[in-house]
Length: 435
Ligand code: HEC
Image (tube, rainbow, N blue to C red):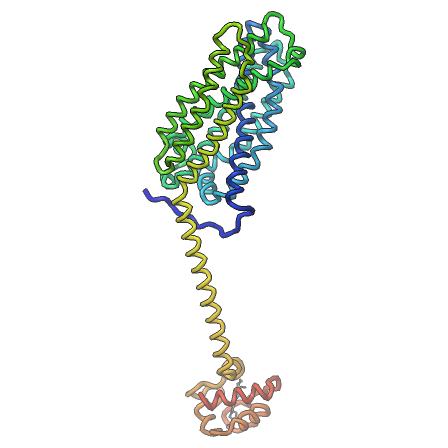
């Protein structure tokens, strides 16, 4: 199937392309970090609330977690503006096409996000109102979490569809775009990253001194809570690598390159020491969970940056041909527009020249043609007759026209033309004689 090639709007980029690409990678990573913390927080708050039905301490923990969700959600939204704008700038034709193709769902993001946020606020701010109806409270938390999980799927479907213009003609809306190869695998990879980064965040967050002051557990030990998150972080890391491999295998070949493959391998390698340290912390009694925590975070930070660059690299590879085709089409179009413009200008100049060449023609047609036909006598005598009578005497015609007399007994009297200047009269007379 051949890819449709739209024409670009030839506008200059607001900054050098390389700078925009760097900004895109950096801004996207910051955005997605807070997205992970927002969704992960919502998920963990739900899980802890359910556990809280049996162990009340978990309910306290769920409440504290929910405090982070609304903050991270605001940051996720604000930090999402920059990458969205840069994507719109760098990939305008592709992103426009994919957004339009899944238009209904793409627009639905706005009400879905609004609803998710309102549910999150209800979940958090009305905490005490729901104490006697925990089922309803958990229901709200569950709906909020589901919505938080649906929204990234819409985004992912869009940015995936954008990469593969050859699918555009056969996509018939959101669901067919969602079922294209690798979208759901990418989504699994995303969700496991959410669990990974949010649980690492909560390991750190529950390790702060202030946390112990804020949350007074009756039975639970903070160390157990941290171990709980740590175990999730470890499991999610393994799952992340597995889904990452599956995504890699499922990616369409047109974006593949050795550079991209090397970046992915490097990203995977960087995580290995983190896995080792995490395993040590989890399994060896006497080990503090904070051992090597900074190194572990550094490993993940490096891996994330490498993956962000790799992701961008794949996108550029996948779209290279399409971008070139669009650029060529745009240049050809601009050349055609320029040529058409020049031709129109030439035609206008020619028309003007013709006017100047026969200045009397227009004035004759306007003032005299109604009554003077070239060969037939109508209201007035035919031009042929006038020409014979006034051969070599244009001044005679002008003089008559200025003050017509009465010659032919069967004719009406010709009206006068006081509004015509001498120049116009001369031009008309010459035109009649040369006709
Ligand atoms: C409303 C109709 C009418 C219009 C418009 C008109 N004419 Fe005439 N023209 C006549 C008639 C009628 C005669 C014949 C008059 C007569 O013989 O008494 C005539 C006669 C003439 C004659 C012949 C005069 C002669 O010596 O036999 C000339 C030359 C002439 N017109 C020039 C013009 C020119 C130039 C214009 C435009 C600026 C013009 N006419 C517009 C009706 C018209």
